Image (cartoon, rainbow, N blue to C red):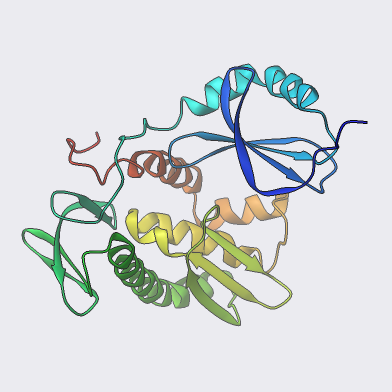
Length: 249
């Protein structure tokens, strides 16, 4: 009897129905397919016992959807980001040229762009310094916005924190009254932060995305759909905006 597939925490890179795929074997009930930022990588999560041929059949059935979804992502610029000279960083919708320094971790803004300092030239340290800066920026701006939105909605969280989030702009734990925001929001125009904070704030009253939630969102921010579309569009552009290329239109 052949060995049954077992869970693989790291996953394996395979080609299924013509698509390069990261295949994860998990203790789940069904096969799920996701197309992930920043460059449209395909991830397939499957039950440990599902034969590879069956997984490939499911992927093939999603071919049109996958082609359309992948097309919404920018092309991989083909080189690793180092957060150094000649690259760019986004801040509240502006694209700033990076200048790297060795020193106390931090960020300063000048007419020439953004000076990013870290203890060494290690890209991971530079990335950590930039993320720390983004976290403070989002926290400061969110704390300025919160009193305005709270007066508008009559809602106020028990806590508001900013963290690195891979797949979400924000989360609300309505039973605890806790709201978390993504530090990446510092990259986008300020209206995007307003939209996400209002969205999560309303979840304190409306836990799901039902009719009442959307009615309240439309009432307090009539242009919320346009802002959401802008955020999603700029997210696709920001994946390659760090590279030394012309500014995205």
